Image (cartoon, rainbow, N blue to C red):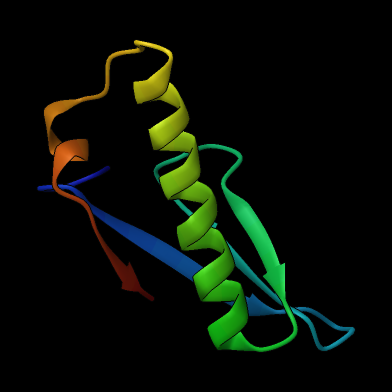
Length: 73
């Protein structure tokens, strides 16, 4: 569960060498990268785009989303 706007990202290396990052508290927020750093950046960008899209369309976000940080696990 999100705590004070912090989202835990799980990073794993796939059998083919690619990395996948997943924001555990945001269903469907997963992104691949050729390196761990690229997967981390890609999934952070995806989560931020998703939240920005919701704001642009007038959809409510929980208060903790207004101050966001990410922790790589």
